[in-house]
Length: 522
Image 1 (cartoon, one colour):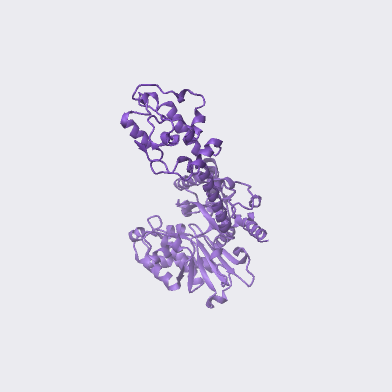
Image 2: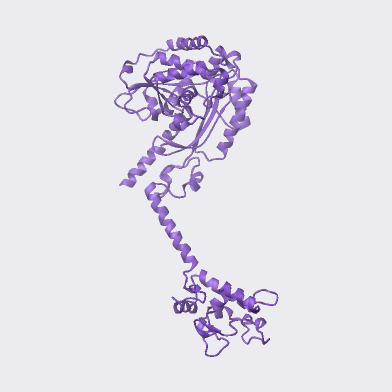
């Protein structure tokens, strides 16, 4: 049989005595020699073969070519022991060849062997193993390319490639954004939390500051608990309402424990303000959930509502009436903006009031299931009487186009969802949209024409709000009659957003970012 590379094929190419048909033992017993690793690394042309004067094939091919080993086994078991396993010297040769491809510190004979066989082809038409670049060098090259690509993305986007992996490790109490190196994440990786326990809802937001005046929501929770249910009649929080609220607060506490929060603020509003057992309830909340809530006054609540909606007030606006229709109270703030606008919109509040009426209290007094047009008008007149006691100068610029209303509550967001005919409520489509005066009137008339089952079946209302939405519309109608406006902007945001905005501004995270940008620019 002729070898296509070197003439006649040697008979015993590295085979052990177990594979010789004549039964003679091999003279070379390489498996017993201590210098086997040197033989594996020795150039193939220096290895003796069965026939004198005949060139030998490279040992790497004999030991590392799976196709030839299988072919040899079919012919007569060459290269295999009697128990079917590879002979030790064959395994050592394969291991040595494999180590040569993975190691950067090859011996000098091995490097000479690769130089000698560079450019040649093996018996099966494949490049010789030693001619391939090492796997480690390929991995290092890929690692260098990845590092360069990550550095480029960091430079262009202002964010490191592994931001998510480092986010929680940096977001811990007391962490200062100025302590970071220049190559780290451009935005402060600090988490802030705001919780609002209202008369009707329990809401939580966990957010990370981004661009100045803005933040990214990391986690959120909202549940209707109706803490103020029956409060108007008894003056106390009922046991069932407190149990519902504490169950929701347990979930909030779990979310807060799972993250490292730099700063948080947890507030309670009208239901705990009015209830005789409000303080007692909050002590129970601390004992059962570990959350310490503070009861805020009505003025603070009005300012927080304004802070949460500041980004929805355009630069061209000169006057705004912002209202937040809650479960037990409704906050109204009159905002007048002159030529010099403050960074905090709440500083432009000239007059404010908090009406002791909300969707829960009003629906309990007038009924929320079966609301007739006469009952609806009665609710509107009650709220108008409260607004009549609000001493606020008229807004002269109402006809110039730079005045409008901003509504932030479940009532206005529900109206917007019904107006858009959404198959399910979508905050992204509702927050910030404009409704004309005629559109608001049409939506109120549409809801008033529906019975309780129809309101409950609407995906933007649901059974939890079906008995409350018309009471909210009555409060909205009284506000519209007091401050007529051709348009109203809808805000799906409120006290939580105001809390987060104020905490981030007080911590100076946006100011520090502006300073770092200025330093890099120089």
